[in-house]
Image (cartoon, rainbow, N blue to C red; front, side, top):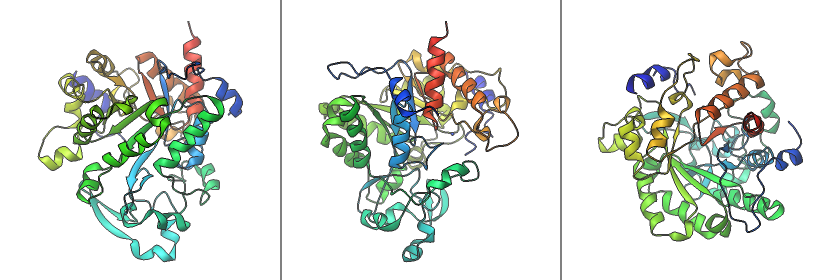
Length: 383
């Protein structure tokens, strides 16, 4: 198994950075049972940062698009503001996903910080109050060179809070009866804890505040760190009202180590966690794993596979790999449509989805939920 994962991942290339009408897409969902009891599909489609291939990521517009396009879950990444408000950003450095660098009134907030052992220069969520971010800070496309069409939406949308995202999903449920799950990631939990801005208790408090997240919608909480998941497991055991909440251990590049393990001096790498012994360890505190997709299939060798899914299932863990994206840049070399990295390669994307479905995943993360939904429907109809 060890050799198979090493070969499949290549260790150097891992994680190189991961339209029909709405009524038609909504009709493709499994109907909610009359008693509103949620039944999780055999394979779930998770709208990664919303429908981030089509709208600037982590905006209400992106989440709305993901819901309309067939996502079972929408995925907010959470960071904290200076005053402890949980907001949706992929990173606490917000200069790359907002217009904040262009705003004269915040020019003095630019800083250089060390986060999980790496230096970053920019504007950071923890240096702003929520009210400041609501003044005139607006979202922008993170990778305009690969998604130029998304730049037409720049500077239109505010940074949403976790509360607003829950309310969005609840409003959709009230209107349509369709339950949309929340798949929430806490970003850099050790870093924020050292700042006195721990997110876990605030996250659970917010989930417990709403009937939708207490009693109706399925919830997954995920992290690239270990200790905060163990803490969440302990707190959830003390709060039976959040009975829908499950935990997912994310797996980054195999040569990297979770930031909290680095902090404590633990030498375990993500590869160690991905081996059968590591997966058995994860199963003591989590319900599933979210591996980088190259833990399962190589980006360069289409004939290379691992036993990762089988190993995870053997200890009772769900497997939800990330992230399937339609642009050539993100597809394995053998599935690309052309040399143009920004080109949307629909055929290659469908083939990639199908490979993962056939491999036995329990769900997957995608930047384009409509493509994922259509591929899943086709796969499930195939004899």
